Each structure stands twice: as structure tokens, then as C-alpha cells.
Image (cartoon, rainbow, N blue to C red; front, side):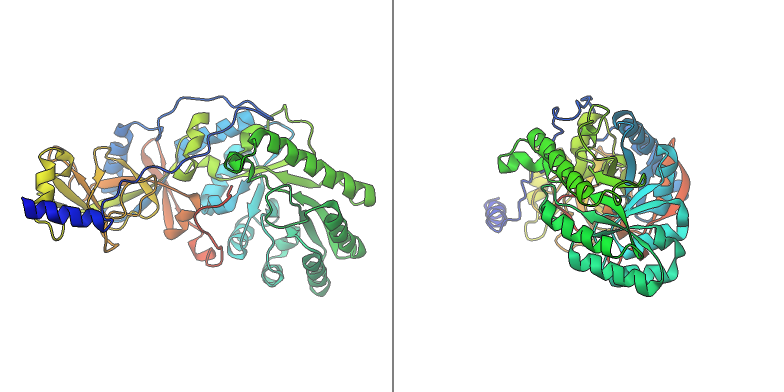
Length: 463
């Protein structure tokens, strides 16, 4: 026994014992431009019986492989919450990088009653143009290198209908040159910095310089509006700022940009088709009918419709998660053991029966939080387990390990369900199964093949 304790101490010293805790979330504030209705909700919004029904459905129709699930019942529930909250003065725009499946985007467009999308990459915009053509109102969420825009203009006539984003005089000039050599007229929106400090016109002087380029190239460029993302607002407390005060300041700055542009170029700002975009999943609840002292008329969000784990704070508003990874159990080994310390885990299992059996998954779970069966626990002696979005408790990286008791009815071939942490992670897989009332009703491709240059990554300010 002393040898076992010595090995355990060595594991501790090497940092292999993980006492991870969920990362902090940004709970919705209740002030400033909208009072959200706080709803008591479980972290999953689902009864375990539903996961059991999904397990039966997958074992019957899609056995033996990792499967991404989109729960359409939860998606429609979330759409209803957003539509009930959003003021009628704001157009709803779908952030496609957080909804990386054309089938899923089509479904949300239909149920939410919108044709507005926001794209972030050449490949995904190509997929949208290929599917929807001229019928969508597409606004770029970040400037696209002019070379990418040129390729799209050559391949899709409807690319001339995109609201391309320019953030500097140089980029506006480059897009004017592109329109000239493409013998077309392009719509361009201007990125403005309303506090995020991620590029765009930082003051009205910068803005007027960009608008001067557009005005000088009227034959080739049409002013299409502004994009001023407020993604920094929910994080204000971490920097010593009140989010409600900062939200008000964002819209004051936005108003200054619009007033400066309209004063200098009144004809440019007289169109009915101008989009003044802001907002995101973590601020959407502020864009209610009470928010009237703002020029913003367009609000973009994506993750709120599917509530990945990184947006678990939305449970306070009544949202349900809608994206899961189902991973088959590959091996069931009892008693569970760990390398170099034979007998240590069985000894620990005498006081904690959840350590009796080892369940190895067919793959590493990736960026997911395991939610079913709830009795499963991460092995406390192996790295990578625990936390809100762990990477798998498997030092070799290809068969994630969790432990459970002898009483847990989990067999080889059954599925373990993980709540996907970030919507864009769906591009790790090629397809998703859409479920309705626990039945697979659609199989949709993801934008994986279109997203080789998307530049997705965990963290940061996202929609």
C-alpha cells in the first residue's frame, strides 16, 4: 500500500491529477436597453430520458461512429425566445460562422423569418451564394481580402449583391479597383470601432476619409451601411467598466458616426437600404423595443440559436443547448486501472464506486462537456479531464476515458453525449443529424469543406 501511495504522490507532483472547475461565464446584465426575463433552467434543458431515447435512435440508425446532433426542438425554442425579445425595429441577421451548416441556416432562416446572414470567410460565403443566390442579404462580418472577393465575383453573379466590408482607406480603394476591373458596382459597408478596438474607423475623421473614397468612386461603389460590433460590452466588468454604461456609450458613438457621415454626404445616407449593424448573442437581449435612441437597425447573432457550452450563461434567459456530440463506447473495462499504479484506482473505488469501471470512447471527445450519462466522471489521475470543456482524460489523445460504477448500465456500442462547446466546432465533422421529437429527420452537411480558410479558434469576442 505504501508503494501505491508513493506513486500517487508522484502523479500529484507531476501535475497529472486534475481538479478543474468550469470557466466563468458572462451572465446577462439586467440593465441598459432591455430587461431580460430570467428563467430558471437546468444546464442542459433536457431530461435524461431524452438522451436515452437518442441513444436508442442512434444505435438503430447511425451506430458505431461519432455523430453530431442538432436538436430542432431546442433550436425552435431558442428562435422563439429571440423573436419575442428583439424589437421590431431591428432586422435579425444570422452569424453563419456559429451555424456552420447550410441546412441549419436554411432552417433558422425559415422559422425566424429572415433572409439576412453575416459571413466571415470566402468558402462559407461561396456555399451561401451557391445555395441562396440573390435571395439573401449578406453582410461580411470581417473584411475579406480583395483577392477572395474577386474569386467569388468571377464564380457567382450574386456576389455583386453582397455588402462587402471595408475598414480602411486602402481597402476601400482596393475594392473600388476590383469593381472597376470586374465591370460591376459593389456594395460596401464600413466597419466602425464603437469600443471593441479590433479595427475599423476609430473616429469620425477616419470614417470621412473612407467615405471620401466611396464618394469618389460612385460609378463602382455604393455605400451600404456600417458594421459596429459591441462584442466587448459583456466583458466590461473584467476591465473595471459597467457593461450597461458601456452599452449606452456604444450607441452614442454609433450615433456620432452616422451623424458625421450624413452631414458630410447626405445623399449617401439617404437610401432606404442602409444597414447599421451591431449586437451579438451576448447582447441581443438589450435590443428590445425600448431601445430607440440608436441608429442601429440590424442585429446579428448565431450562437444563441444553438447555445453551445461557451454560451451556457444564456440558460438564465431560458435558452436550451441544441448541439451535441454522440460518441460510441468502444471498451468497458473492469476493474479500472491506470498506468504505473496497479491497484491504486480499485483502492480509491472502495470509497468512490464511480471509479470502478473504465469506459473508453471511440475517439477523444474534443471540445465538448460530457452531460450523459450524468453518473460518468473523469478519471482523477489522468490529465485533460474535468472543467467545462475538457479535452478528454486520455494522455494518448485517441480514446477518451471516463469512469463509472458497476451499476451504470452503459454497454459497448452505447453513446456518450457531449454538449459541444462552440458552434464553429461543428466543422470538425462532415455532417450533422437533425432530430425532431427524438427521431432523425434530416442529415445536413457542415461547411467543413468550405471552411479551410475560416480562421476559427476558441476564445475571444464572438457572436
